[in-house]
Length: 149
Image (cartoon, rainbow, N blue to C red; front, side, top):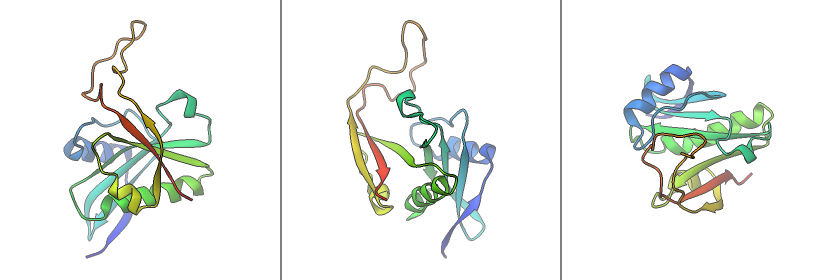
């Protein structure tokens, strides 16, 4: 049984993320989403949108904001590769994503991505001028990744 990419709507991607993602809820929006299927069964999704970090939002950069799979081997790597291929085809020049400290990044390395920055733990997104609800990721260091080519 081989894996293949499939078109997917944002609503379908969000439902999959809700069911399978370990620590994040579905994102609020996207530029595009990609599914991966084994036979006719959806086994993973990638959601690609504008960068969360304002300084990266230059009009030529996108961010893989969510990747979720049911654990199917190689699905994550296929999604990261397909996301970069699609972003380039749309004219984008840069694609980023993040892993939390303690995550191996094996699927990213297998897809040809590399660590380009280390982000120290932050207290969270909430500020006095714009309060936010903690999503469970405050105080965790992160690594920013980009495709090698």
